[in-house]
Length: 266
Image (cartoon, rainbow, N blue to C red; front, side):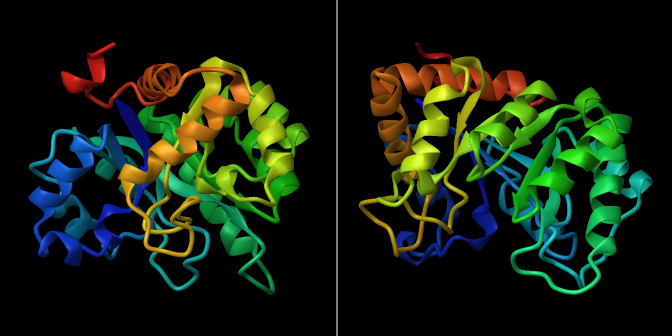
């Protein structure tokens, strides 16, 4: 069974499931996904996200505000720590820096990132880090704010081996998404061949970044197997082996996530 270490379930179109989240959950488990981490990107939609997954023991959540949300409320450390006390919450984020989609003075992004790191250190929960066109500043802030004390994951990784190695040195995990399956991602697959097996995670970032062969269509957690298949091929392992080791890695990276019985099946 697989773990989708990063998805946005509140943004998935449930029309194929007649709008029924329970049917979606059943289909996802039938496809071999035992656990999902539903990741927050703003606090305005957080209550609805939390309510959606309230009765889903196979879903954990995070709390945070995405760097591409300039007009959203930026919480202070105390607010994040209070929200992270929820037993269903396992992480702070997603947070980080994104210079690709944002322009002008981006001090607000950097300050928001620092607040999230401080909150993670304060509550003892790991960070979910987004970085795009901002790797140097992302790593510099992680170091300066002592993010290694919290640990976490570099999600949807698409950077170089040098960036991966620096994140690994800080104790972070590296999570690969559907980008790994893209034809033009040869250099990223080379990175995936070098990340230590005990630091690998897989994700969908659904409903975004659908992997080959469903690229261009809405993504779902059940497609995480496509990422696992490519990762298995690159590492010379079976898909079941990748599923087992990435699931074990997830529960080490996010110790507050409660594994279901299916997570523990070899």
